[in-house]
Image 1 (cartoon, rainbow, N blue to C red):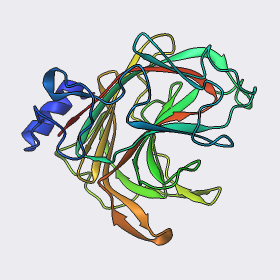
Image 2: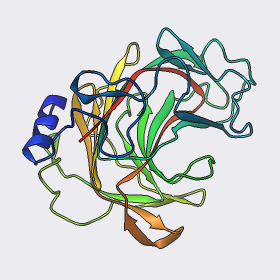
Image 3: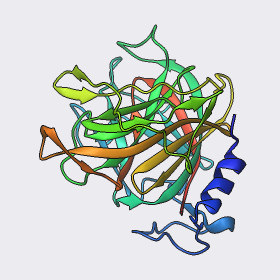
Length: 272
């Protein structure tokens, strides 16, 4: 299985240079760290981000989000709302393209209706267009779920999944060898693909490191140093027309609120 270090090496070999300064497109305003990284989430508040919760709106009235010692807690001890909190997300105020995103997450013990017996679930939504916030926006989802972290779920988007060769997704230098988009299903009026990760490398009891590399219309999902999903030819529906798709290379980044306690830290981004 290709490691994170090997994947970054492949990026360099493909002529993709990691920047040492600000992001190439729409840089964040957070503090810069070694290696050209920028803190996308400052660890103390939602500066540079917006909040949305279904049935609530843009104001976090129930303490869904709380910060402590550089860690963002979602639906943690500070939450004072109903037993069935509305789904939602926090979203970057800025769109990004050609980037390497890295963050750590850890599950908590609190589970909420209607998912008290379900797998704990969250996600990173990327390539989300700017505009009005609503539940389940057009996006590509990087699934964060017990034993399914790294799955890709394009919503009103589509992608060509890489062909796995002995457990190694062929990315970024090797095109998968066909132009077939993964099948789509109708899910509540949205067309979705579900592209399974090549292996399960998440832990349920401690911190996990997940990384997302977007370069042009390709993307790679990395879980605890393992490259598990590779996507090519990312496209979005044009004007809501499911018969017409256009290439997509950028958008906002969202972290989901999805009925389970989860914490995030070290949310960073750099250009590629």
